[in-house]
Picture (cartoon, rainbow, N blue to C red):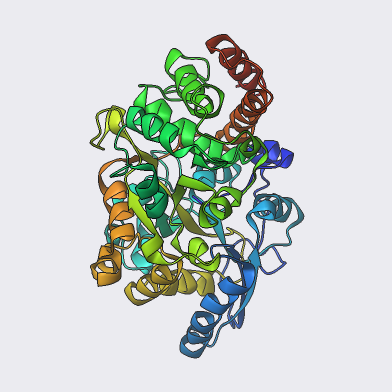
Length: 436
């Protein structure tokens, strides 16, 4: 999912008040006899906020023409979104409908602020079976009604600079991590580097650790939802990721300080040859790259062939659409969700953002068979796994994401990154998790 570096306020997520409202009043979630407006908080999906407004405004106008309901749009940067949501749940001053990163679904669900989507409510938007099962897997805790509806689906891919590969004599993108390191040493010359990373981007750190954890046979939580950050597999996964800088020297030390999207800018400028990211094409084009300049391949796995288990190569990324339970315009909010997840809007919106429609019927459009989107689509279908759907997932992002950030800082400063130091950092992270 395209996500923020979760701020310290995320620790309050399990105490979300159930008195949140949309439209500024708490009426117990009842319908409004004369619904005229909705407030919609959209996450920043495009290269900038203005691009999002340009994409969304005509669609919101179309919704108003059909229903008579005017949608007040606010596009919120990822750096602010979660804190804004948390504030809305406690103040009672929030939107009717909002975008949430799909990995937040369980955490926000635990607070009771979001409208549950049971079978009857899914029936109001065409049925649950319209959606990809992978996308539905990141809408809340197992055994509970989803807290949101999938809107945009994403997955990680390996983007590579074709010219830099050719100049270095690398014939094709690596399919295994061993190949990536070998090729990376050929590419990391002359002030340029093989792989981009964002050591200060807590959420991206978690995404990479989750995937590598799967490849090492580890999860970061047990079946009861208790953290297992210090398992041998989890330690090995984090060390492997940080070692791309600390040991293999294929990531520039300066990347330890990089935050959101800085690795994409370096890639677009030809400073790095590869980057692991979700649906990055629109950002590359916004920075002046042409589609012919880069290629797209699946993220490496130990066997070279992505799949399930130890061959997972992406988290199930994406954006969900949620409704505050106490909106004063429930009927209008559900109509809006139905509109945004209709086949036509799913096709148009996901084309615009370079993402994959979580609605099955929308995937038949030829746009989703292009090389980049085909890789993302196939990854979602065959080799992606959702992040842990546990109430404390957001705190996991903060604590373990910070641990990895600090390990990258050690690597950048030339301090040793060992199995012991990684386990110590993850022990500290686990101790910071809420008890019980």
